[in-house]
Every structure is written in structure tokens, then in C-alpha cells.
Length: 79
Image (tube, rainbow, N blue to C red; front, top):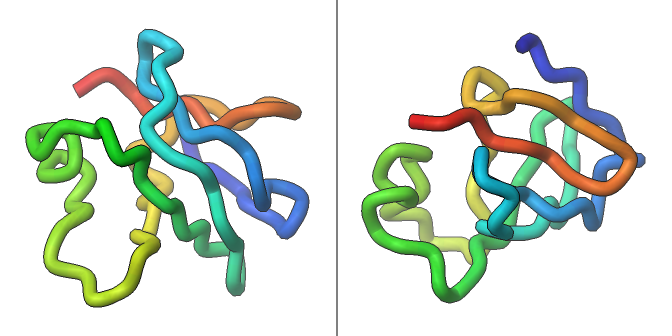
């Protein structure tokens, strides 16, 4: 999917392919979403999303990892 993010996506839950919450979309800047990861998210999932080594609390959500965007959530593809 070629995801098209807008400011309307702020605050949506980021969920994995099984519907488990992995974070929250905190902000969308210039069409690029940044998510705050759920504290319980495993390091393996963070590594696959390339959510590591950032000095901030939010991480860029790459559109290539997005399966779908609904009114309530952003679903991440199965790895």
C-alpha cells in the first residue's frame, strides 16, 4: 500500500497484523507520520520497523510497512 497520511491520522492507534496496539500516531508532518511506541512493544518489532536509536520519543512510520489506514487505526503489515 502506498499510504497517504494527513493530520486526520493524528492520535490513531498503530496496530500489528493481529490487531495488537504497538503505538499511537502522535503527529503527521509533511505527510510523514511519527508514532509513539507502546511501552510493551518488543525490541524485535521495533527493529523490524527500524524504531531504534532515535533521540526523540516518536519514530517515523515508513509507509512501506503500512497495510491499511482506517478511521480508527493504522495497521502494520505482518513481518
